[in-house]
Length: 593
Image 1 (spheres, one colour):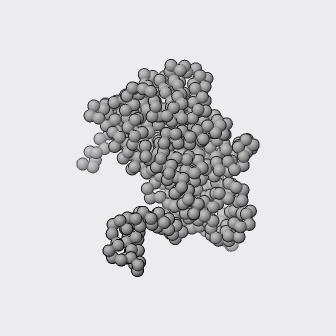
Image 2 (cartoon, helix red, strand yellow; image 1 turned 45 degrees about the vertical axis):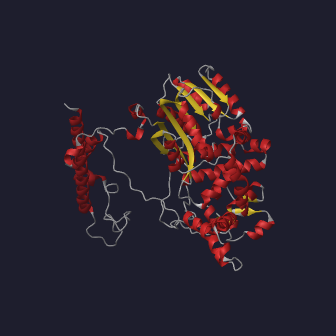
Image 3 (tube, helix red, strand yellow; image 1 turned 90 degrees about the vertical axis):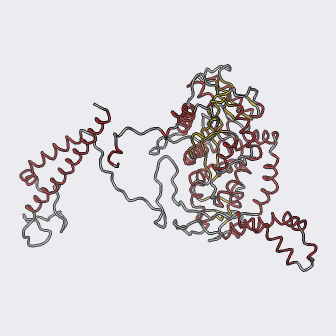
């Protein structure tokens, strides 16, 4: 018999038995009601008195149920029905029929309009409120372009013959930045929340913060909100303490913090961030990477754990709290699966960190792996890890060099991995970086490209947090951009996107585990690196849990191949995952034609 017909017959049988079980339940309920009526008191002197004169335990107006009826009543009146129902239930239960789902009322956030998440896999939000944002780029452009023209017309000492394109362009260049600063400041201060479906507690700032600096305490008290940038600087310096756990206080930041652009933020953007973005030299990249990643392997291990993986893990089960090691192994297994990794493959891991993925791929899949990093500490650690795992240098190795200096012939690698390294390349060199990678990849090769990114419809909290990250955590990492920009860059470089997963919520879970490690090693960190650095990283991890969970910052895992006529696209079907066919349910379409 055709397997599809067998499946259809089985589905039919299950459906009929399900109906039989429901009919049995209905019949039992009906018969029980009849029994209840026959044993209900016909006449009692006082409500609540039983027939035998004892006090009834059954509330007035509620019919007795089989559980509190006399045993002989059930046995004498419904013996046959009970056996039949039990038999039917036993027959049905043997088929493992799905039970009816229990309907539970969702827990709602303050305001009663937004459902709260309840998953053990992540840190759930108690106040999933929206912030203020975003300003209009069109309005800003009009102000910058029209403002100088209006000014020239209104100034009494400017003669008509003096007004020309030279004067106008000079004023645009002169006033463009001040106009932008004024507009951003006013928009961030006056912009309404995106929506107010979640009500704020409206509690005084003293309920959340212990402001120990007298100047700040005088300025920010009661219901006066403190700008987030001023808060974090004061927190790093010990001028402000939080009442409770920092992560919990940040969950309620909309109630006590203002997401305003401050003069300090503008100074940083104009005099530090923009010059770095415009320059982004090879020497600058090397200095910034080594300042961060060569700080000390112990520093990073105190939050990354023994696996030493500084990229997002992957949740495999949202119904339990997986360990950090489980999340990272899930990710490495997923990456190797998307690459369809084999022992004959030549793999390049650009920005390999401490070489964990290189060791995983070489040991478990037998692939030949080359890892590249700019950090000397990482390269030394990675090669030692390979040696400890019995992987010889002819099979895998970690090189300390720039991606621009990888010494191989074009097309040498048929599998390439780049996990959250491209952000450090910078917008200026992004296209060139992707073209270099394109040349290194075999024509039938596959690349897994994982990169952090931002949402296009941002909120001011997103921008302010991004400036904190650029200043304190990842200097020069200015290439965290929206997904459409990343996809456009890949396609212009000659790649074809095979699949893309947006994995911000997985990152939130990963950073949650990092934060727990960091707090567990508080004494060690403070003893070696000091209170201030501990606080900076504490704020970084706590705020990143929120921003990744909320979608302000995310991570994109993109699988690409070369977009050539001769590319063997059929070989990628097995790794399409979400596009694999579902189980065959027979010729279902015949019923709708």
